[in-house]
Length: 65
Image (cartoon, rainbow, N blue to C red):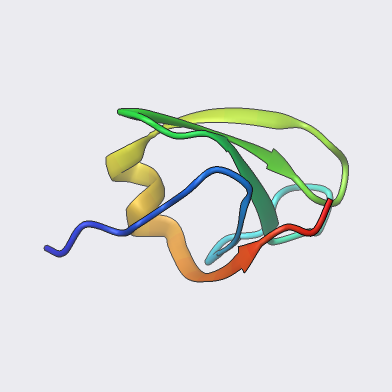
């Protein structure tokens, strides 16, 4: 399995939607655990990197703040 290059502030589209209906998340902290924030409702989640990499549909790129 090839490691996915996730960087801070990347927008990730996941295969499964969040309960609020959004499938877009912003990566806030990257390490062995990755902290992501839902673009729809603002809820933050911390997931193990391995689990998150399996659930990524595509990496959209940097968020323009």
